[in-house]
Amino acid sequence: MKRILLSLILLTIFIGTGFSQNNIELNFIHEFEGQEFNISDPYTVTADYDLNINRLQYYISEIAVTHDGGQVTAIEDTWLLVNANEDSSYDLGSYDISTVESIGFWIGVDAAHNHLDPASYESGHPLAYTLPPSMHWGWAAGYRFVALEGKTGSSMLITYEIHALGDGNYTEVNVATGAVQDGSTLAINLGANYNELFNGLNVSGGVINHGETGTAVTLIDNLANDVFYAKDGANSIAELDKLSMKVTPNPSDGVSTIWLSESTSQPTTVTVFDLAGKVINSETLRIGSTSATLNVQEPGMYIIQLVNNQGVAESIRWIRL
Image (cartoon, rainbow, N blue to C red; front, side, top):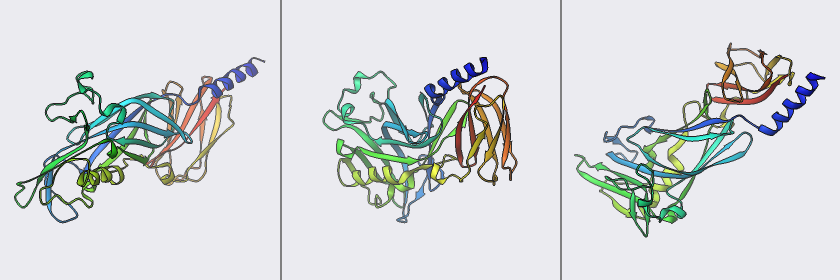
């Protein structure tokens, strides 16, 4: 009778609590043609001329994570000012997210905040004044959504500057991506390949455009559509191996078997987390494995996660009676 009662309690918890909370981290890895990006280094673009980039900043807002079978979690009241010359790792907070499927955001500042007074924000807030250089353009236009500056020409003496702004250039981005689990942190790693900024954008003659049209539109379109991609094991769920698992029995009195849909063809890890995100057990399977044994002593609800080199293949909730 006690075991039946405990089972009912745990099943109620299982239904009501959903996934355990993870801390969500968003990382941008700055690159040029797939190599580490360094400010002011000379680069050759596809139009076959040289340039450098000595300023690249852009705003990101209205972030939303799609996860766990199509659920969408909005990251409220968050604006990021990304600087390609700095480490760009952002703590987005703790959420009931177990398996990430994609991330969406917008380039620029949403209209509701684009025309507010930057002085109303505390120092250090992404929308506060930043001097030098400022990302706020003025009361009417609001913020610079993207600021791109550098030098070009045979002797790197020709200046180019494109500052893209305006509510009409507020542009949505969606990247299919998983996340890398590290304890209770899920890291979403996005590559940002800045050579793609110059697709159809020739600055060799020294373009100067601080505005809402022309090369400013091209710059934002390139940033939104061509630059970002899943990086470092955080591939989209659609790109993962077709590896999946089932756990039997579930619920269990302590010992269950993890059955894989196919034999492993690369290093694969099975990790068991409690609802607080603590790692209870972790086992790296041999290549060619088709199953593993799960043995947990303490009753409770756990998350079993299957991870290979391409990211999180699957997560399953499991109850130890």
